[in-house]
Length: 344
Image 1 (cartoon, helix red, strand yellow):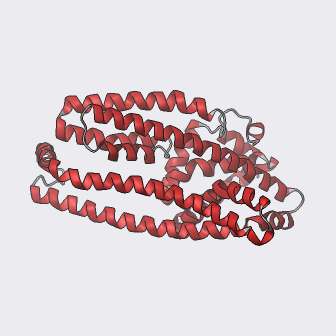
Image 2: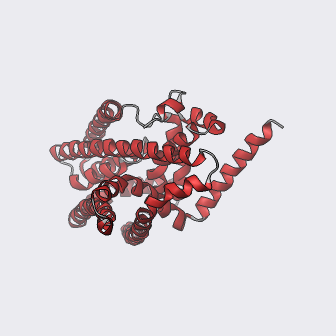
Image 3: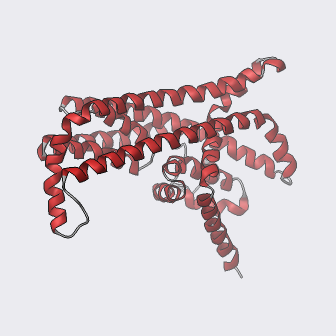
């Protein structure tokens, strides 16, 4: 009988994960919008507290504008990087094909399903371009939906405290709202830190690649910045394209130099600078973070990987404030004292 509650919890978690995966078209943008609303809510709250009632809509408009400006900055940097790639990549295609053909021929000789012909390489490049355009269209639709969700959440935010305290019995509503407030503070600090560290890392790696003569340094720097938001795996995934591109265009010795330089920068920024600035804001176990990234990437794809840490941190803080669920917070936490660590 003692096993039944734990078994029921595991079954419930699995079913919830499956439901989220099936409903990803709206559950992913809704969750993304929820955390964006948590991030920009202080802007709305600060302005609404200082404005007369008839002008409080300006607080919501300002919070939404902060989100749109941040998205515009990231989108503009990505557009500049992609534009540079479109202009410069054709000049290097002959070198890339010359490097890839022997490797593909070697793989084909061993029975692997590859085709080293130039026509096949061109077809794969065209397919990759079409997939990229489709991805851009999907991303734009996702962001439009997120924007509407954020707007509605900000409009409803002042009434949710009253609703939660009326719906949940006892002090349950207060506990959950307190946990969400603590999660919002921790996630804001975390995102500010990783954004700053990501900008510094991207700048250092872009300058390094430019110094050693690697083409498309701006594109690689933008990739490093964007993948910085994916814990643990992001830096590895971001390093692969510039290393392979350098190998294809400048040879193995230069690619090795690039790999060592990227590794050195990532080690310094990831293992020394970032932990020093982050302090003990989220206090998540490293193993839990890696598992969370894998699980949420499986459920929602890249969006899930981006949201893995905020979601896990929120679960940690909610569980830490509910005695029945505190063992879950102990498992998720890095130090085994989640109830104290979760305080804002």
